[in-house]
Length: 264
Image (tube, rainbow, N blue to C red; front, side):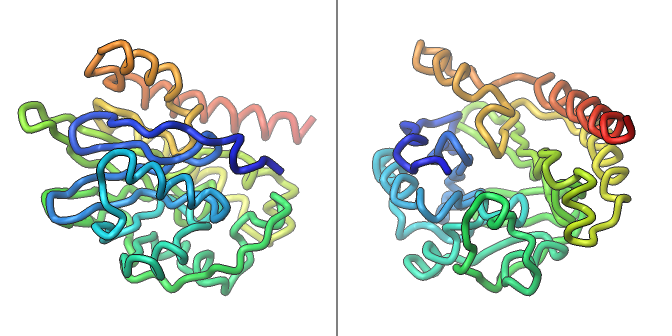
């Protein structure tokens, strides 16, 4: 198990009203809606102190946190949510199909696989379905269901601005194949059709036109490399119109290889 301090990442502004406050092991993003802060994924509970520290380093206030939007129901993305809710009164948002991942009705948080315990369950306030738009302040987030990694994995697409330029950002709902292996699906009695859902959703995602691709893990969108460009003065370091499409196509190849290796 990784130690929390080993995953610390200095926070930074990605572009305009979009920020990174998370860790190496799990991304956490903040969107300033003009009427309060929206957090996308809270990260691990044991890294919460780093996320809070990073929020303040950026000159933002934790007390302004109004909503926590989740890409999917795994402990590395919602482990710290209950603590943040108790601290701030923020409301929580998740896809309807991952509701019982969050409230603990089903043991699908992936905590056991990581040698952890998920005890800080929460009852989501807002349940989204495919195609819904979550709106708060000046932010409108299109929810795009991308089943596979979990039953309710959801990608989000929204505009960000620095007051002059408007760019379209998108974060993937969850791309890992760890929960699509035969072993995992059999263990939790999950349908093999989730593999087909995964591929089909990746193909549909390619129809989305975005400027800024956000991974819910840093390595997915080459975040570390882009930060170096940002620090070098490139204001548009995170603009990569083809990055999302490349990532999706790579994911499709990866799951095909997984299935092939299991058959062999």
